[in-house]
Structure formats: structure tokens, C-alpha cells
Length: 223
Image (cartoon, rainbow, N blue to C red; front, side, top):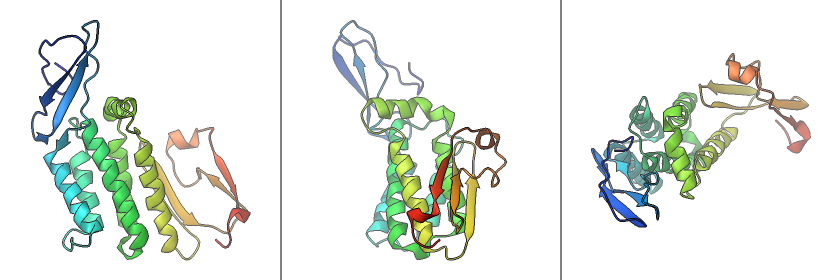
């Protein structure tokens, strides 16, 4: 029995066993029995919870302009609720959640009128949920399967926060600080910008960090 309570029966060596995903899930889980008769780690990348599948469908409608009842903030809020304190997230849930966030990021890039400060907070909480330590093994599974691991989530954060450049006019800094992720977006006219800005957050893992990036103002024009 694995961590998701799936029981894998005896099978021949050098065989890929496949079982239907248990619980409120669609798809199949697989597990390889090696040449020496030892189970490798199971693969849940094709397992998707019904609730996250529904959110994926709502996001697809949003992209095609068919979703008038579930704007960006509601979709993000629903996904944040599903992923919060959830010990049952499979790697397929993490993969699909990252895809949803990338789709949302692409959407708001072209629809900046749908962005809001409150939404940034929800986005940060959602990323924090997905990056929780309890999901470490599932992220590793995606990485080992060649599905990119956490890279897709990082890309979504980058593109989403970049969209705020279009709606911020004056010198302004918005900071969302969580246990597993900190996002800071804004515009400045100083000669040098240091990231992370340790004056903007009291989180010890940031203030004690020895890693920082210094950006010269002349890398871009204006603020």
C-alpha cells in the first residue's frame, strides 16, 4: 500500500501495473515492477480530482470567452480552497493546477481589467498551498517523469506578476509574503533595485537569506 492507500497486488517483474485512481478521482495510476521484482514509486500524474477537473473546465471556458459567471478571482479562490490543507493532492492535481495558473496568467496579460490587488493575495496563497512540504514527493514525481516539476508553477508566477506592470502607474509596491513563496510587484525610480526587499517583509527566511539580485535602473526606460 502506498501513501495514497492504493494497494498494489503482486505482478510480474519488468511490468507496468495500472489501476484506476481511487476516491473522487478520474484517470489511472501506474507503477513499475522492476527487473529484480521491486516496486518503483507510483505515478499519479494521470490522476485528477473531480473538483480540480471542474476548475480546469471553467478556466478553458474563460479562455474561449464562454465563461461570464466565473471570473478570474472566483476561479483562483475556488482552486485555493481545494488545495488548502489538502493532504490528498496527487501529482496530476499539481500538474493541472500549474496549467490553470499559467492559463490564468496568459488571460490577465491580455485582460488587465480583470486584475486586482485582492486577487494577487489569493494567487500567492494558492502557490503557497501547492508548494507546501506535504506535496514534495508529488513534485519530485513530476520532475522524475520529465514533466517539469515546479518549473511550470514558477513560470505562472512570473507571467502573472508581470501583468501588473500594465495597471501600476505610480511608484507602488505590492508584497504578498507566504511561508513558501513571496511575490513583490511594483514600479520604482531608484537607481538600483534589490530583490528581495528585506524592508518589505518580516519573514525570517527572507531577512536571513544571503541570496539577492540587484537590478540597475538603466535596464529599462521609465519606472
